[in-house]
Image (cartoon, rainbow, N blue to C red; front, top):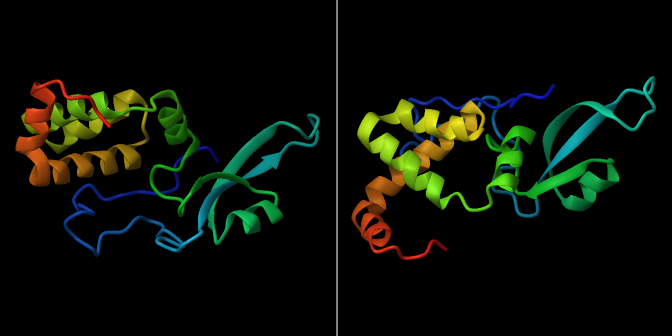
Length: 158
């Protein structure tokens, strides 16, 4: 299975409603030391070295994941942006500031669906693109004027 197992309801903004959750619910969310790790399934008929599928799961610690033969992808529980598709985008685009500005303008001028579509065009899965767009909505509420000023003055991103 190479698809993102998480879904996120675009009508439930995680920044505004603490009752919002993913389906399935995130395991070990907020637990110190938790990691997200991949469990690969191999095809022994090929030569046993080429994975044919994977799943990702939250594990209590890096050591526990490695003891099970899992490959740790990042610290923190697995979430809507933990699929291989999404991790590839993070690796290929280490600074998402410019994308955030572009997709933020799409959101401001054309709405939530346009913001989500903008992140999907970059390559993010729908759940991850939805989360990034919720981050835009939250940023607009908390930082619109200072952020626009920073952008217009060409102040470098962090």
